[in-house]
Length: 288
Figure (tube, rainbow, N blue to C red):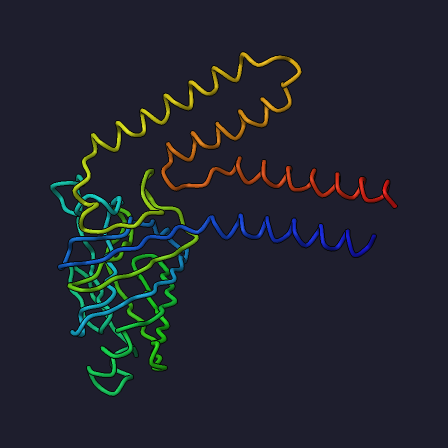
């Protein structure tokens, strides 16, 4: 009986663990040219830190890898970041993977490319690398640090300390240059609803807002129809209907938030897992 109980508990824990792992926001982007694909933007609050895991396939130049863009307004990763598309859009600083960047800010670099044996060593590392990134904001100071490990065994740590007046707000998104592809993962939620958890390529950039809105309205209408049909079920099916309706509502929320996980879903799944475990335990006791 104890073995059966342990097996059931282990299965439940693994299921819940997989559920929380799925909460991570992941975006894959591929740049055919500079500034043609971006991740959505994430807010960096004062006194807070955010972390990213990035798998990057770099190009043949020192600038052909990860670029972190610090701006004053959020962007969705689909529409080109610019003042023409986002009201008041301005960039504080663009920090490339090597120790270079531009913007209306002061910056100092430490480590990274400077700690390697020349440009070729840096390019070779970034050709296929994993980056653990931490970004912290304290007042007007932004500390952007990455630990890079190349598939070739080379490793380097780089810290960029950026000073700028970020009182208007601070957001960060990532982009690459020609021939760069990246997989960017984080436990953070994109600053704009409807952004994130997607494969963002140059082709996706051409999707219009009208098409996206139409798809969302169609899905919402279908879900409302499902809810209406469920209300006609008999009293005998009330328990099943309640569960189905909850799942449908969770599906609607997921559609409207496009990639953001509703906390209600977490509660429902956790409750279901507990009920299942309890049921199996009772059944096992009766059998024994």
